[in-house]
Structure formats: structure tokens, C-alpha cells
Image (cartoon, rainbow over all chains, first blue to last red; front, side, top):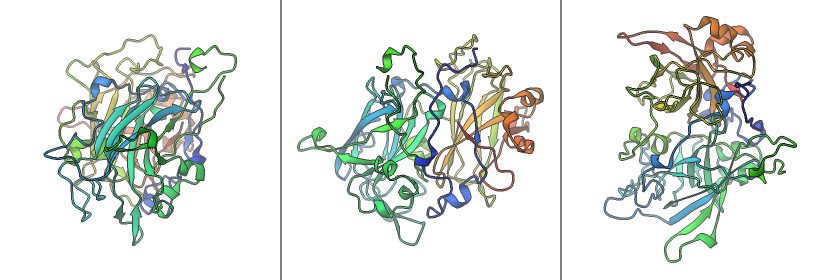
Length: 243
Length: 206
């Protein structure tokens, strides 16, 4: 039937995601649905999704060292962030649009509503985009964001992090997450990070230093691989691209 | 044949400053071209122009002023601009079908200018009534919320819609129906999202 999705996706494992209600993260208390989610059979409405073209990106979208430059490079540790976007079966997700945003090296966001006393950096916006290639690989260049205090419990600090928004092949693969940095002592104290109930799922948000991809005398590199929901495998179906 | 080996990456909240990355102009960052926004139509787009607008309320009935709402919809013929939609219906090359709006920093209001989508085939014999697929992100929302917007002036389609018919108790169906509220000769629908409490919107696990 034309209404039968040609692809259906593996059900989301909610056990590896933070629950809506996570009281140590206080804002979630009034913003969490309390009724059970309604389980839907996947239809065309969910297995389709917006398709973005490479021509929609600006040339400096993946270079946060230069895309807001006025008269100098931004202050901070120069880093390259790269990795692959894969599905459940380790197949590359091609053409995935990734949007990133972050604080500057002092932990301050270029945003009307951020009033943290750390200084803004006139040469840094913390705004970037990139798209995965045919191998699912992506990269961008930036400075390492600083940690910052936030109004939750009286003395809560966010570990250094970069926000990631991803569009995979379908509306149901849409994902927003945060990348953290290996060795950050604030990680075990963070109620947002710790809202993820599964230790393995938490660990997979932590990017490791990748000495192989550092640029000598220039930039360190961190590797962050991302997994989006994949389509179901059908037994005995000829699917050469998955081999 | 590879079996399931990897786990999906865990979701984290978009936080309060997501505008920087997803709607930079709202954060005061200029210069980005081709940014998805809340106007989905151009002069050439086929279909009936509609405005859809509303607020997102928390469990204390306060409007969120730091939320983002995204919509994904079929064109006026009921076809999605995506290779997995194999229905024998025309594509509208001027219509991608994706929109993104941020709630106003002062009032919490959001709106889209789009077209009313057509009906879409489902795996049931019944068609899906015209609807917009919705995701909501915000500070305090740990994983993006999925819901749908249906239209009050499609009563027969809504009554037959396979998703509407899954909702129990049936009174909660009304949480997915946008009310007709025309203004200035513009076809306008009002749709409020209630994250929690009385009139909590039906959200989906898909």
C-alpha cells in the first residue's frame, strides 16, 4: 500500500534517555508531561523528514574560529571536533545536518538572556553548522567552551559542553544532545548529565582527546561519534548497502 | 547481515540558549543565510494559506518564553517532500514542509505561516486527516516532545483519523485540535500546548 512506510525504525529505548521528570534538574519539574506517551505505529508522517542540501550551509559555518571574527581569533583552546554519525547498525548517516552552539572560553554565551559575569568575546559567536559526508563524518573547528554556574541548586556548575542538534533521515530520528569533554571533574556533579539513567549512555556523550587528529602547533582534536535511530533489518531481504 | 549493535545517543536538553545554534538571528547573531524559520511558503506555493499560532504552557500555566517548536508537514496534495513518500501525488518544488519557530522572549507567542496540508495515506485503510507533526524543545525538556496539530474544521477526517482514534480517554483528542480563530481576513488557527496538568497535550512515543 502506498501508505505503508518503506522503512520503519527500531523503537526508541527510553531507558538510555533522561526521563522527562528529573527533579534534580529543577526546570524539568513543571515542564515534564505526567501522562503516559501515546505509542504510535510509524507512518509516513514520522519516517519522512526535512532534507537539507549542502548548498544551504555558508562556507564558514563549520569554522567557529572565523565565522564571527572581527579583528582577531577568539580567545581559548583551539580544538577540532569531529566524528561520525551512524545508525543502530553502524551504517553511516549521510547528509545529516548538525547545528552546534556553545559558550565561549570563559563560559559565557552570546545571548541576550545570558547574564553571567564572564566577558563576551567579540570574535566568537559560538554558532556553527556542518553536514555529514558519505561516510557519515563531520567536523568543525572552535575553541573549548568554559564551564559556567547556573541557577538550579545554589552552587551548580555546568561542565564544559557543546550543544548538538541533529536531523537524520526522518522526523523521528531528530535528536538534540550535548557533547562533554573527557576528564571534566564537573561531570559527576551535573544534574543534567546525571539525568541520563544509564552509565554507558552517559559515557558515550563524553568526547575523548584524539591525538591522531590534532594539528601540530595549532589545535587539539576531540572525537564524538553519534548514533541516530536506524531502520529495522528485515531477514532474508536483499540489502547490499548494509553489508 | 548486521544486527543491532549500537545504542542511540542519549538526548540532553536544548537549554536556554539554543537560539545561538538553531535560530541565531533571535540571539542577535547576524549573517546566516538559508535559515529554517516560521514562514514555510513562498508566493508560488500551492494550497490554502494558514497561520497557526499559540503558546506553550508549563504545569503552573506559565507560558514558556524559551522554547522552540518545529513542524514537519505534507504539501497541499498530502505528499511529503521526502524519498520515502511513494504516494502517487505531485510534489510542490516550492514547499519543503519544515518550519521552526521560537517563542517570543517577552510573551511566549509562536506562529507559523504555512499551507494546510492534504490528507496522507496510512497503513490503515483510513486516511490520516490533515495534520502538522510537531516537536517541542526547551530548557527543562530532557528529550524532544512529539505531538500533532489537527484542524477543527476537518471534523469528518479527524473522526476517522487512525491516530486520533488511539487516544484514550477520547476527551483528550481535543488537545490536538487547533481552533479556527481568523483575524484580518487571514485563516488562523490557535493551538496551545500544555506540557503538564489540566488539559495536558497528548505526546507520542514513535
